[in-house]
Length: 554
Image (cartoon, rainbow, N blue to C red):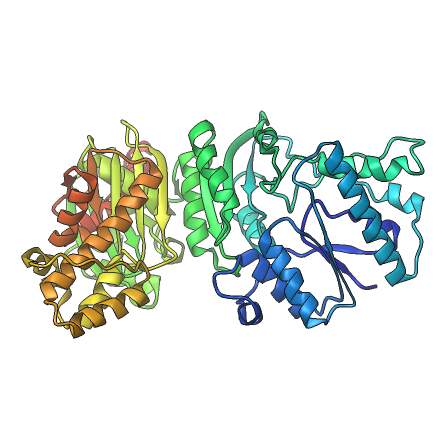
């Protein structure tokens, strides 16, 4: 039984089944795009590249495409030129759902039916056609989250459903195809006309003109939040996201993928923080409190450093440590604990872990995401703050706070090292200066240089060229500082952040970046004495909550 691949919800699946086909949705992520980028280019739509890779990987022999965008047309051209499929067809889809569009699609369906019937040597089976109609996937009965926007790959959906505290409904075009069965007694030439109208009458994707109806997707009384998915190098849904952000009252989390298989780390941080923002996980999960202990601790296990803060039971900071994480989160946490003077694990009533490595610290009694912990720590340090800017070793994040220190919104940049501590560390190596020296070196600039590349690799090439042109290290560092500031300010804008601002993370110690960012934002940044410890402090406060809520560690 040969599978018949398809990618679009406007594909006439019922017609193809009535002609003996076995339609299968192509929606698998790829490990990479070696074939697709050889026959297209590296900035081609990632979903389209994944379709090419899946065809190649699975040895697919039959494929029906719908020209829903220019990239799918290109996929058709590539596959047609390769000549490796037994059956390949491109169905032309009108932009509208009016009478003329229905007539155009009806003609296209009849041509497709004739071509596929000739290929398979079959005839249209009316009974099989009617039997092929199936109801839309049922929505969860209780509260749920919805994935909307661009189609989500099977791996992404599996991860979202596994990590989410609520059921997740796929309302993208890959998971929300719904056609009513044809009316009883409808036969003959009227049936193709009705079928064309039914296909066009689905809730539209962004390729169609009547996109106003897409709001119906979100008119669900038990919908608690939206996971909005976009695909790299696809603009259609990025535009809708920006419009949706301004008009919906539902909590909204944007997820962009490139249709490659990814680990849970980055995604779980976003999803867990979103759940905490919605209060879906309840109180932070501190599983046990050790009785008879005098202190609590928070451990922020980051990609570069592991930071530990120890509080006494009155909430005063008693000890702290900042160490390199190294290759294992567990080892980094153990090093941080060993660095404390006079305080050991036996003295701690509760330990809450946060950061990317939070799930790998065996002696932690609970864990909370770094988004929530940074918000808590920032509010404790500076209650007036309404926007937290955290630039860490390999990611940066912006967290908008309400007056009680709760998370209103957040955005993260954790797919690229540009604009992070690692970016500055790599540039220091190229310039052959100490990282600590870069913090003040850029303040002595004379010529205003622009580092235009946002990619770390390309920025490094720019720096090498500037060195060759005999520009001073101070001028180059100033340009790098401005580059970090521009990228960070863009994150603030995306999050809808406004002052007063508080900055955390190791880069907050870099005076040049701080000055450039303050100029870009047009407002001062409040920075504490130990900006690296904000997340660990927030985690320690959550540990303290648990101990004091339990009546103390008696």
